[in-house]
Length: 283
Image (cartoon, rainbow, N blue to C red; front, side):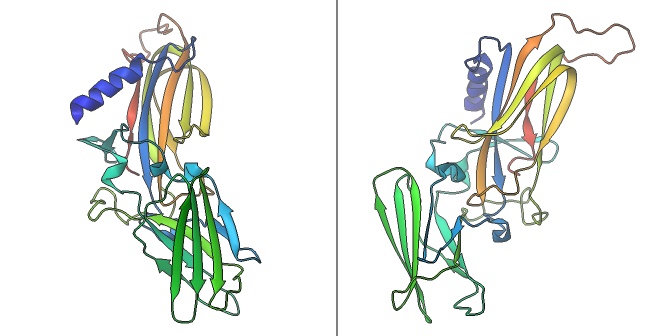
């Protein structure tokens, strides 16, 4: 796998990201794993209205719906590259659990987890759910069309149930989570660190985005040089299935030919521009 990663990096470094002013460009990918382990971190896709239904059509919440077969990531601990690479498919095949929850005075149920054997498709996914005193049944239908999830929830008399919160959780492969990424420290959204180097004074753009190109964060720093780092913490209101894949990149838009240092007491500048793997990954 390492030679393939090397070839991929060479290709990335040779790209100019479509901007003729870009002097240097490098990108990598990082994988968030939170709600797939700790369902308390899952945000609901929606809550049923008085007709017992709601829809959710944000495809970017589910990275398995995109072509990720060629995305190779470096596995890292908090500080070091673990000399191992991985892909999203090493953690999940795209199978989901469904979490249903309703808490009110009538208390038809407080919480329920449905464990199906299905993979969400880039189609219209319709879930017709019937909740009785004894059981919950789910009938699923797929039809062609732009990605959408439709939940219709009713009781055994066919009456709509209002106020049911629904979230979806990726099922992880057995033993997919090792000692480097376990249940510890998942009470809050995790964060990860990215290091970079700029060989001479320049203007740099950093971007973090989803697989559909949605920009999560983007910022430009002027007149920077040397070694630096930034931390990334996912947004609190970001809806996912407990996994999310991000692309992060660094572009140098302008750069002086010399390092701009005027005395012998300044620390030496790095000899090259670079963007590191994030630490840890997955996070």
